[in-house]
Image 1 (cartoon, rainbow, N blue to C red):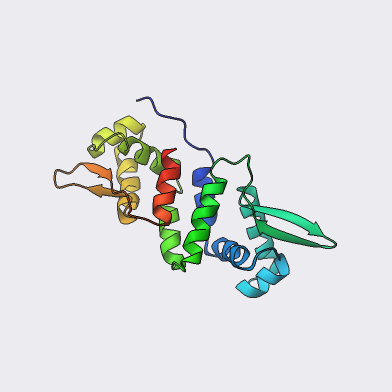
Image 2: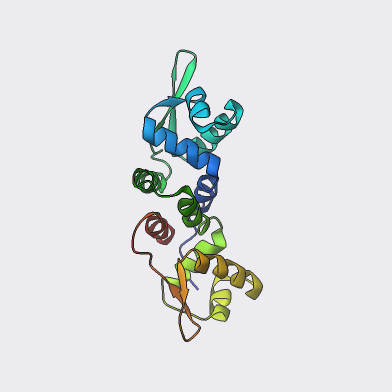
Length: 186
C-alpha cells in the first residue's frame, strides 16, 4: 500500500506530553506565561532538576522557547516553526488546558498516538474500514501487534469496531483527540 511517510515527531511529541509531570509543566507555562524553572517547580511541587528535564523535553519537541534574562531562563509557549505539528499541537493543548479538561483524559487522548504503528493504523483506516487481518497486512505488522495497537486505539475511542467486525475511525466529536487525529492524518 502506498502511504505518506509517518510524521517522525508526532508520536514522540505525544509520548513527551503523555507524562503527567511534563503535562503539568506545560500547563503552568500556558496558564502563567513566561516562567522559570524555580517557579514551575514550586507550583507543580516537583524538584527543580525534574522540572528542568521536563522543560528540556518540551523544548526539544518544539513547544517551548527559552529566553535568558540575567541568570534566569524563562520559558514561553511558542512553537518552533521548523516542527510542522508544533503549532497545532500547542493550540490543541492550550484549548484543552483552558477548558480545564482532566489531565487523565488528556493523557488518554495523547497515548493513543504514542507509537508509529498506531499512527499507521489510523492512516490506513482513513482510506476506509477493514478487518484486522487486512490492517495487519496493509501496515506490515504481525497480527498480534495489530491486535495490541487496535485494542489501545479502541479503548481511546479513536477506532470503533462495527457489527461486521470491521475496524473504522471513530472520529471523536471534538477536543484534543480530534486535533491529534487531524495531526496524524496530515
